[in-house]
Each structure stands twice: as C-alpha cells, then as structure tokens.
Length: 128
Image: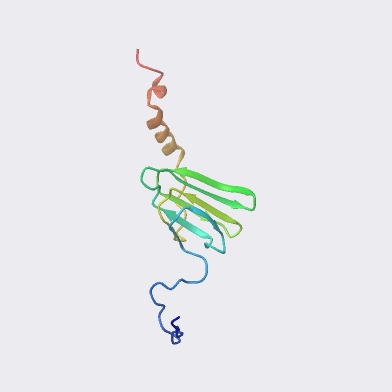
C-alpha cells in the first residue's frame, strides 16, 4: 500500500480531492439534507432534462413546505428551517443566492392560460 504524505500548509487541493461540507451544486436527482448535504439559499436550474419535467420539493420534518413541476427554468429558496430538498428530472442546480425572480403577474398568467385553452371563450364563445 503506498503511503501518502500530507500536503504542505497553504498548498492547493489536488484534483479529485473531495471537499468536506455541504454541496453548492446538485447534479443528480435525489433527496438532500439541508445543512448537511446542501446549503440553504437560492438555487437555480435551467429546467428539466430533455423529454422530462423538472420536479422539486422542500420539506420541514414531515411537512411539505413547497413543490413544483415545470418545463421551464426553476428557482427555489431553500430555508435554513427546511430539512430536505428533493429533485428529479432537473438539470444541474446551482446555489446562486441571487434574488428570487418576481412571481408572474395576473396578466401574464391570463396570457398563458389563453394560449393553453384558446381565445374563443374570451370573445363571447365560438364563432357562428
């Protein structure tokens, strides 16, 4: 068995060395313990993997705090009081601590709804 000498003080970590402590990147689906596996803060993902829908959920003990299923980029604020964060079918999550994006306005939600169901119901019904 080869012996390994400790690196001199102040020496940079070598490639392949794992760091201790919580991650700031989530690159696989699963459930992560907040404070142990990952840090609380604002996390962002580019959205779902190809052909999927990105799902995430935050829990505090047995209580579901928040969750979402999306085909768009995702942002989530994981709080220090959360106990776990679960993700599946999402691209890599990155801890950014950037401000959360503003929620969509009622007008933009109505626009999305109109695209989804068609504009006929807003013009008095179907054409004669």
